[in-house]
Length: 135
Image (cartoon, rainbow, N blue to C red; front, side, top):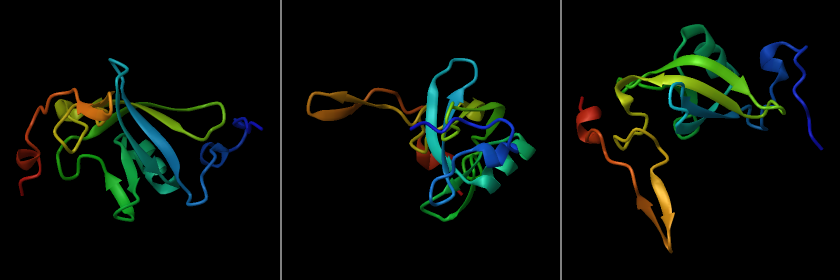
């Protein structure tokens, strides 16, 4: 059974948060439409994203807010935020600073393509991660 989004509710309340208070978020290049990455957001990260104009996610592994670009400088400037008919996934149209969304130094995190019995990397590394994350 579908649970359509109720646009009469306050915007954060209208969304369908999972049992952990999270919602999936897809970051898409606002100009090309290319899917760059997938991450999770909670209410606080989504509210801060809207306020700051930059993508802020919830890191499940670190159990803290993750300001995309805080370590790499590859910030994501928000152009629009959409949700689907059920309100259970977000689509962020973004401008990717530096042209690199993935920690591997690639444009997109979706660089593996299924090939026979294996996954094959099909997108080039634009910048060595050692250079990106050198402190």
